[in-house]
Length: 84
Image 1 (spheres, helix red, strand yellow):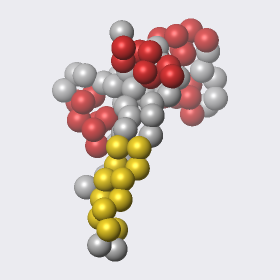
Image 2 (image 1 turned 90 degrees about the vertical axis):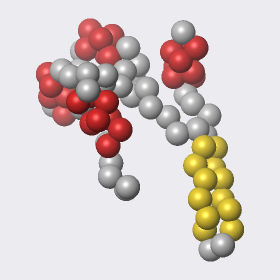
Image 3 (image 1 turned 180 degrees about the horizontal axis):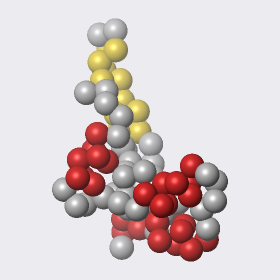
Image 4 (image 1 turned 45 degrees about the vertical axis):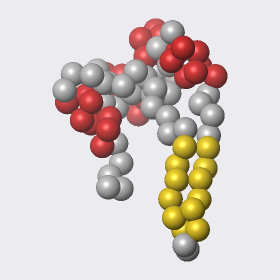
């Protein structure tokens, strides 16, 4: 749809925020700390990951009649978290 944050908003709304999401993760104090550049080590520990646990591994589309595909491996911390 082109709408940014849509998956993050919907998951947070139904009570399943994405791990590491500072904006929609359910604690607005973490968001304020992020915006005001005052996240503490304790705040970062509560987030579990430095970034949100959301990753698009493959993007495919048709551009000028040609199929295009782009792949991006996840960051190491995300892969370790996902592996359990």
